Image 1 (cartoon, rainbow, N blue to C red):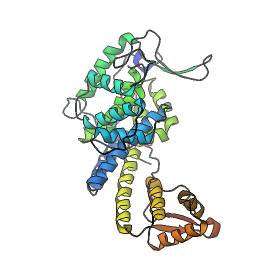
Image 2 (image 1 turned 120 degrees about the vertical axis):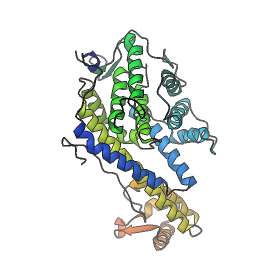
Image 3 (image 1 turned 30 degrees about the vertical axis):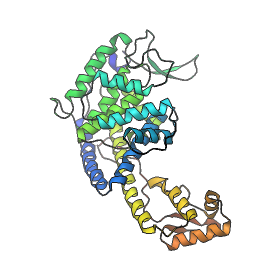
Image 4 (image 1 turned 90 degrees about the vertical axis):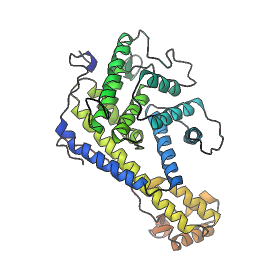
Length: 383
């Protein structure tokens, strides 16, 4: 019995609750901090953080699976679905589909999970695909559903899911578990624990012909949102993408047994790091708004273009800092004009200068907030 679903205790997962206790508490504290930060945003800024976060999750959850989407198209589709002004660009089916699924996740987070919801998400996700037999329904093929890597003639099997004949029954039990362990259910679980199990449980069943990873991560976000009573807007997929190798390693290890403390500890660290990432983004947007308001009417077109370009980099800042040469390239100005513009931006308090001569660099005059990795160690401490 090589896989978790082949073992007699499936799907009765077990874990060490004390190891997760501090992480669960920290996640709830962090959720309160994030809500407090969002309250300082005005309507336009809240709209921006919502669009920014949903589009980032849509793009990064696809990139985890090796699919690179056009971010501007995803954002345009999301804005259209929220009834907001768009640039009327033509959006491809892949961008449209993931955007629709993520917006539906945002809007219907509180709704109970159902077969119909999963089918709808799958149809959205594989919109435009012609290579799939089972669209908007669970897989029916007779071949084993395997996750493999390596050469075709010598593949490495990382996981094999239950046969198609078992999928409907397995999903029935999964949906029942998901709904009874959420708020108001008879077997309520803590936020991180439930979300981590939901993702692993769904991935273990692997009910669709394709798209299981993206739907599984959406279910983790749905679970977190239900536990908090509002859309989480945390950068879960973006954080997983940054840890993609360890993500697949942790999943593979968890697929071999039903004692899942190690998996839940890994997931807890990622979820809290994702929460930190979003809080940093909200605080950055507050500082950005204050800076732009203070500088309104004082910048020429070149300076405004460069400043907005630097602000697009978000809380991590402009990698390597801005040099006079980079400035000249961005705006198409002479070295003398670039130097004069930069001196004025420093005098206005928009940029901070560091270094001398050819090592001179400029950074935004607002705090940068790079997010450090978070790990839950064997003692339950977040380090």
